[in-house]
Structures are given as C-alpha cells and as structure tokens.
Image (cartoon, rainbow, N blue to C red; front, side, top):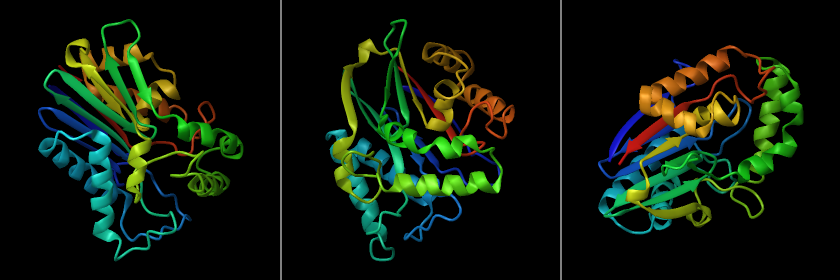
Length: 272
C-alpha cells in the first residue's frame, strides 16, 4: 500500500486538531471536534492532544495486533481515558472527542472502520465509488441549524448561535438516538461502521475529514468519482486548495451556510 496525504489547519496560527498517520499496511485518520469560545470543557487537555494521542495509539495497535478494529478502537479509547481520568473530570460529557477512520490491509483483504462524520471512499473500479460516512451527526444536527445558518459568519450573533448549537449537540453525543464519536467511553467503538473487502477489488482508497469532504458534501465542487481523479492526478494538497478557494469566495457563509469560515482539512490517498 502506498499512501500520500496532506493536512492543513483552518488557520495558520491555530493548532491542527486533525490527525493522520500511516504505515505500510495501515492508515488512521481522526478529526478532533473543535470547542468554540464560551463552551466549557471539564477536561484540561486540548482537542489536539486527544486526537493525536488516540491516533498514535491506534496506529501502534494496528501494527501490533490483527484483532478486530472495533476491539482495537475500544482499547485505544480506554487507554487514552486512563491517561487523564485522574486529572480531569470526565463525567460530564465535556471531554475532547474525535471522529475515527481506520483502514488496514491484512493478507488479501482490507478491513475498515468509520466512526463519526469523516468519509472513507473505496474505488472499486465502478463508475460510482463506495462512499462510507456515518451520517448520524447530520441527522441529529439538521433540525438545530436554522438560526446558525441564518446569521452571517464573523458576527457576534453567529458566534453565540454556534456556541448554543455545539452545546445542544453535546446532549446527543454518545447516546442512543444520537451520534457516536471517540471520547471517554470505549463502548462507542461498538457503534462504528465496519466492513471487509478483498484487496483485489479495490484500486484505491481515500480518507477525508469533513473539512476536506466539504468539497462535495457542502460546496458541490465535484462528484466523488471526480474527487478520486483529483487525488490521482494532482494529490491530496490540490483537493484542500480547492476547498480553501471555495471558502475564501464566501467568507460570511452566505452561499454556503456553515458554523465556521474554515475547518481543519485532511486527506489521505492509498493505492494498492
């Protein structure tokens, strides 16, 4: 497996809360959930600390064990929780969290896991690639976005609406009928989407945080098949460049309403 990737923070002077790591036969992608100003966290650690600590833990586990990916994710969440459960209050749901994609090549097959709204694309040689994304967050979030989407970005009113929006979604995080991400509860791993596919049926795979997948899901710049063409011909950095160009053309979110002008964006492209 050959892997190329690019990752860019939302702003040059802010930490990148995405994590991307790869070995010759495994890739891990995490998207840390940003905490906007005004939202109180009961954990003293940053979102970047969480996503990078869990991401590096998962990558190590995948290289050392052939166990089922949900089992490895549960072990990883449990391990990271143990690193700060004596120093932080992890009982009130305000702890850092992240989406997770795990992709592993074992012998003649690929195992994959998706938890949260990051996107995995498998190019199986058909006109329409296989697109896997956990859409439970979007289902929960859609009814609560009206006020946020109606306000121009960069205004105090928009910032306040975003704070309220994030706090509302926190009530649905890692609950039945809500959405699931990696945080402090290892049982969230059981809620991940998983699958296995023969390696000879996959030409390539792409892993995208939502900041990169917005090229299709929000901005409609291309189709999923065209996105794979961009990655094949020009690489992951070109996809992120096109996303940033779209965002800069609509800084207040008038054409494309969104909670923030820019998001961390990460893309990995794997060839088999």
